[in-house]
Length: 174
Image 1 (cartoon, rainbow, N blue to C red):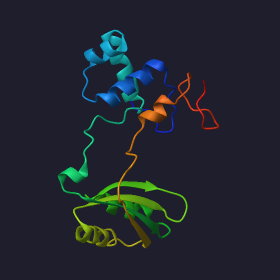
Image 2: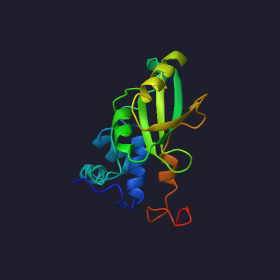
Image 3: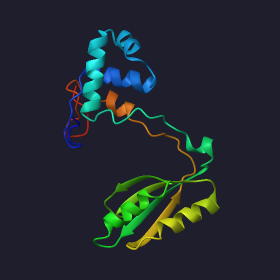
Image 4: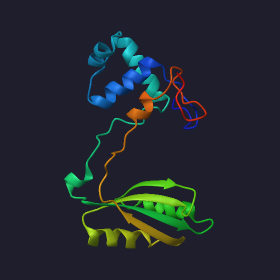
């Protein structure tokens, strides 16, 4: 049974070491994982199950480099949405394969989308498709030039304090 996304899970040292091992070697088996952690196989399996069931581990899918499969252009598109049209717009965005992420945000825009495209002409087509739904008042697009810091979670996990949580100040508890 998966817990609510808002339920905080406290990670102990073994949990953090397990996550680090999985981040380093995603295809590691439970037996090898238990060897690396120095715990019984059943302990490694139970901890892994706990992290999956609590929603801490959200998936085991491959981390695909979209540029290697032909999506050479990446962009972030900020959308300002008309009142009451959020559901229609997000459903529409979910139907567009090149919209790879959507986040509801505060600030100047309502939604932030990460978009992948083969080239600039394809990006223009994707942007036109995004605009096909009623309810989008304005868009702003920023092209990604490069990604000097790739998406990552391990440094934040490793920075958690001994209690496995972040202190209110944002600094880890030691």
